[in-house]
Image 1: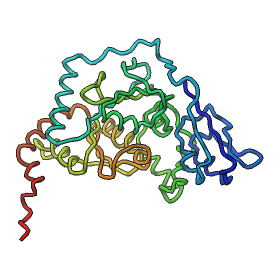
Image 2: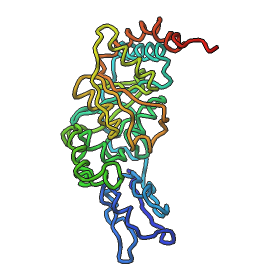
Image 3: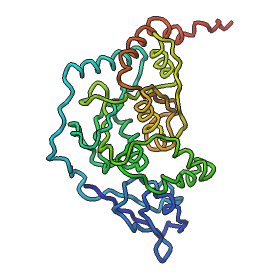
Image 4: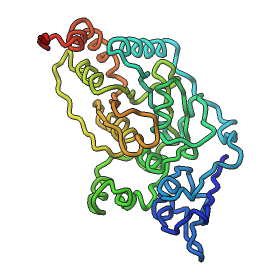
Length: 324
């Protein structure tokens, strides 16, 4: 499988040590001359946090080795969803996208349990963050990622595929990023987020809802705040229920869009987070909502009703007086 080579340009390096401090997996150390080097290269996941925080761009992280190696090539894959269920899910996608005028496909998310057969989906040749895989899935890609294909150690630990690195467990790295004021605030943020038990999951799977080969636990929608408003209202069309959402700006895709809907069996909004906005193509006008899969019929039916009058009336600004 692909490993990573980390090289430092001494002509650029100012020996500040930021790359060592920011590395979440403790790969780097400073040598006797005061320059960083990869003391533990086998721990590198290719997140490029070190290179991204180098003020002089002196550090380079490169994938090396056989990127096509698949450790699961001889493993029998899970039976796909039956055709009827796949057509049903594809129908929900078409109905919701049409009613709300969504640009991006809703993403089916699967968290593959330890001991569960892997779905028949491609494993990427290069490591990705979970949020990057989600962005690719809304554009049409199906992606299976075991832990060794995840480049974000935060995500793998949150999803129960690995343990959590010390700098992430203590929140130290969030203080370095200047995301929170001090260690106490960082520790509270870490303590309040849900996580799955270590080693309880073996892979993540994402795909457009219409193409999924596995029953998703959660479906994640991408859109503008206005579209997310209609998505929320579609779930309340028949009940009038007001939703309680939890959002923080931390761990957007893994915690807020996936784990909270999974754990609470309720929809949840998220505005994105530092990591997913810095590492993907999501625009400033975009946000997300994760919903348990069983809510799809309610969403599709409610959205279709709203599209008959409420949505077009609102978008046509019927209460705006004429400008004289």
